[in-house]
Image (cartoon, rainbow, N blue to C red; front, top):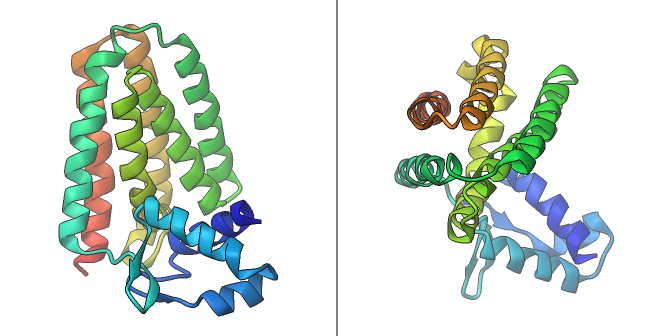
Length: 216
């Protein structure tokens, strides 16, 4: 029950059905989900550990706010972690990780084809986590997972075509898929410079869309 509650509340946060800074009404969630208060509370505590909600004394939980400063810090972390992972990954046997990345990439393509934005966010998350695993460094893997749990809210905005982002959405999808393909190719070739440049470009593509959204 707690896992079910976690997944439902998690998706509400990612899709902004529960907006940044919004108070989480535990009683309403219990009624909506048809489960006890304990599983909902366990789910919220788990979400707090992933920095998606915050516990406020005597006020319950709120969805973690999204500030420009937070977004800037997230992208700084993505650059440091993913570009750093490249240097380790090119010296490892990444055949199994590459197969998993390719599988996640098919998930990205299927989600685009079926217009499944949440599926796209999850497949994209899986792709990047399999890439992190190419480093064979648990600290890097855990650090990226923590950052990307928060970044997925931004990924939903990027992929959903909200407001001013919608006009070039199909081009954005094509760019994401193309850059994923290049990441896998350069990783397989063990071309560190090309891999790092592609990862930088991939993060910058994402960052530009989000900054444009947040500043309009």
